[in-house]
Image (cartoon, rainbow, N blue to C red; front, side, top):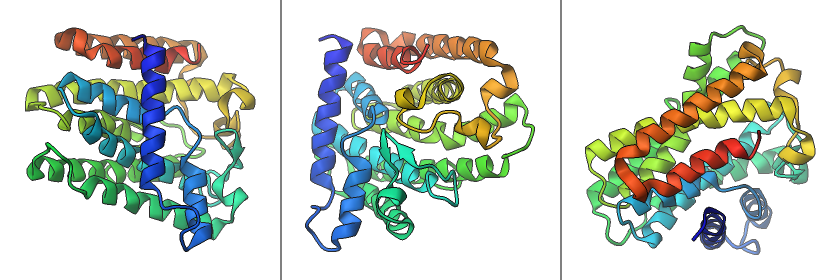
Length: 294
């Protein structure tokens, strides 16, 4: 099976699992549940679920167990996008090619939808997972909670907001994005591995890989924001520059940012080498992250 076919299969599988996990739109409170479904279904490349499935496959994890982890991490990602787009944050009106949640509904509903998606993620991951020992499942819950909170994604967003208009060093920018973007990508990889029989050495190696592609993902996003159109992105192009945010492009320049992306890509590939052919999908996702842009 080639990568495109595999990716499409995982995306469809994830869409079905998300559909099943979300409350029905007709269930009261209707407007809240409509907003939750609007924000999650029918859009996005599902990069984090792809990483879950690719990592889990290395260790023989069942697809059903991986589905639960993939849904949980994607719900956290969706909630973060809903909140990031709010007027008190990035104040954006377009996401995945359609109006953002607070534009389509209202700010209060968007805020509650994000809150509910976050709690639904932990509800999903805390349900009984066949073939996974309770102690391992508890570790998975701990992993996702740290990645989502002040020591992970939420903390990274706070640093990002405080950095508007500031001159950051590359080290400071990396620290911010290791938390804001990288923490949830790392969680996706490690949650998938936890669904199988990964041992501590495996998890350490995959953690380093995930850190590399987390930064890679952000460098590519910064290049896209500077060079791609709104139609290509499905969100407002040039937003970072307009908001005077520090990015890899405005610190390094586009050429050096692309060079950095190339080095991160190679480091990610090198880190996976000891796993051999079973890590093929992770190699392909690494390339996909880069080749979707330049």
